[in-house]
Amino acid sequence: ASSPAAAPRRLPFSRVTVEDLTFFRKTLPGRAITDPDLVQSSNEDWLKSVRGSSEVLLRPQTTQEVSQILSYCHSRNLAVNPQGGNTGLVGGSVPVYDEIILSTSLMNSILSFDKISGILTCQAGCVLENLSLYLEERDYIMPLDLGAKGSCQIGGNVATNAGGLRLLRYGSLHGTVLGLEVVLADGQVLDCLSTLRKDNTGYDLKQLFIGSEGTLGVITAVSILCPRKPKSVNVVFLGCETFDQLLKTFQLCKGMLGEILSAFEFLDSECMRLLNTHLKLANPISDCPFYIVIETSGSDSDHDSQKLHNFLEEAMTSLLVTDGTVATEESKIKTLWSMRERVTEALTHDGFTYKYDISLPVERIYQLVTDMREHLGKRARSVVGYGHVGDGNLHLNVTSPAKDPALLASIEPFIYEWTAKFQGSISAEHGLGLKKRNYIYYSKSRPAVAVMGKMKTLLDPKGILNPYKTLPDDLNPASHT
Ligand code: FAD
Ligand code: 2HG
Ligand code: ZN
Image (cartoon, rainbow, N blue to C red; front, side, top):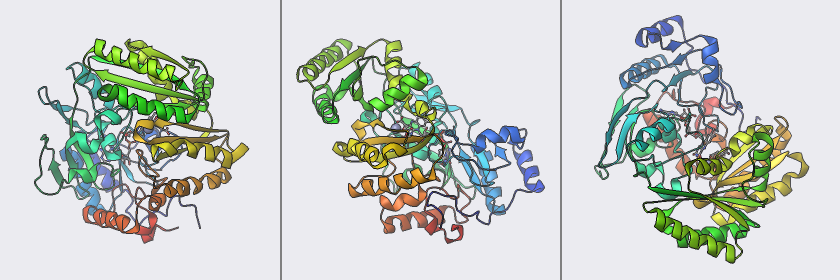
């Protein structure tokens, strides 16, 4: 039997023919790409860990074009892989076999922005950073921010229900997304592009597509509620001796900074070592076992500075933190944030990386890293812990000089069993994609997964949308190897 992470057998979808290409070229003049050099980068994921063998990359510009493509693919039984910025970390964004890649990159228009309500409506292919820049000029910000902002697209963010660095303050996309336009597998356009804060008319269908990883429909437009741009932003980088002190600092921080707290993130000394070694980023404070990044966002800089000052004084005098530095100026804020945001990049230089994205009761999150280090001993090159403490979300990454099946067998299912023991989630924010689909039962009951299977069948009866992803192979008996 193959490993649960292995690719399932190719399902009996049709193969692309000359007639199909003729249709695509007619529908998308100059935007149905078959040049292997151009298709190549869309076949491989950001981590360079999985690769498909698609020969066709389609780049629609309008919802109507997406609808025409899907309606055609549905009738021809051709599989389709929706793709945004291709920054996903679970192998969901690239084909497994020869699925047609449907890229939203050219669907990058802003459709409307209401300066009174802060509601932005745009096409799915808008790059997150471009939306942030657009909004900042209008005194607003996006309610989410991630290290991949320069490439990831809002449609991909919604499809993965991305969390990121601001979730603590502005909540998840399940709350901030007000409307979606989605093209279903058969080409039907589902217009749920509401811009209302409140709308209880029947089932809230858009929620189904948030986090569905391209398996239920192609998101073509998004409307999202954006907060005002804070007038005063401060970032603090602190060092702690123990994780327990870090948690106590979090408690103190919630109590003393309360309404202005916008992020509480952490990284351990192993992350710092990789930032120093691989990216030549210097530690802004003295060496410590744990580092915290705290961000405050408020409307009155004197008030915010005073609160921050009181908090830091208390944290220092009660010996919760041993060292720290504060930034109010934009370039220093960026520098401090890069210590947290660039850990993922540093890891790519450390060797082959096994990635885990776990939700746990917050007091448990570092125990998993310690246990994993002990469990793996010298077999791993690095075992690092970092993440979104404020959301109880740990990123545990293990590196080795090269892909190492024996090491993988030591990590999995150990990590998933550990997580399930404490009722955690085996995917807090990255989704299941190809890599984690068969581990879903560690976090969801069989009846819940069975209902997911029924929803998939209802919305995509031929299973052409992102096959082999998110749902476990046992829902799809034909795909067993
Ligand atoms: P892709 O990678 O292209 O696709 C991701 C999934 O969504 C695939 O299953 C794809 O089929 C589907 N999809 C994409 N677009 C659509 C669409 N329009 N309709 C339907 N399905 C679609 N994630 C977090 O949650 N928090 C973080 O802090 C975070 N930081 C990151 C930092 C780095 C450096 C990197 C590389 C990744 C990070 N990620 C993070 C992971 C990733 O999920 C996000 O980057 C992002 O949400 C993916 O968006 P994308 O446009 O790149 O989507
Ligand atoms: C982050 O929070 C991202 O930096 C990426 O979610 C985490 O690379 C990872 O494991
Ligand atoms: Zn994250």
